[in-house]
Length: 271
Image 1 (cartoon, helix red, strand yellow):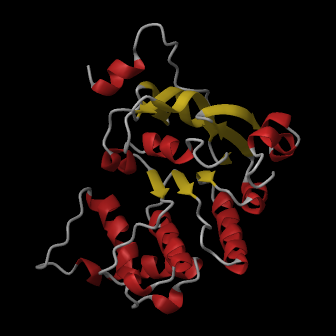
Image 2: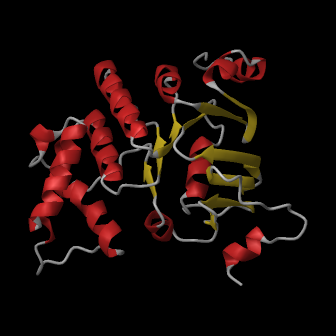
């Protein structure tokens, strides 16, 4: 039996794999660091095709939860299930191959590559498994892949920067580049950790419009955001984390009126 199956079948946990329309199921997840409880009793379902926002004060555990989902962290207890398959215990590249892509809070781009090449790398990795640069093969000369990468870059407004080195891009443009790197993988589930951080308002609004178009295509998204304009523009449902626990879940209108949410945001941006 695998480590993931051991976790999933731990006696007395009441483990399940979510309902029929659930694409991501987080079941009783706990995670501590040196005795500090970053996540406690986290249960969360993301429905297929929806945009699900996770909000909460700084230090609430939001990024930790995404790290658990993509295999960067192993929970102390609990399991994460994607499309009926237990992810807990799998490596990040294995989870990515299953159809889960992530856009990080701090842009993780390849500074030594051009903008176009940055978008082609994850596409090659998705196609070929472990992608490693080979100096004897011109991976970046493949026309079909280049054309697709150019189309994705145009969709995020970076068509004028194809040959620019990623190292010279602004933070906001790097955010858009990493979004393109996620989109070209055609994931079933896209996890976005503050996708508009560092963007000017007009770029934020353009990103909102783009993510709305993606939703029309049926892609499921989980978004962590501090900008409530972004959250309420995009989210079908919202989960609120505070102190590592889910304190509220519901529609945007329900969350706006929830007294626990207002209390959790004292000293933070009010919802």
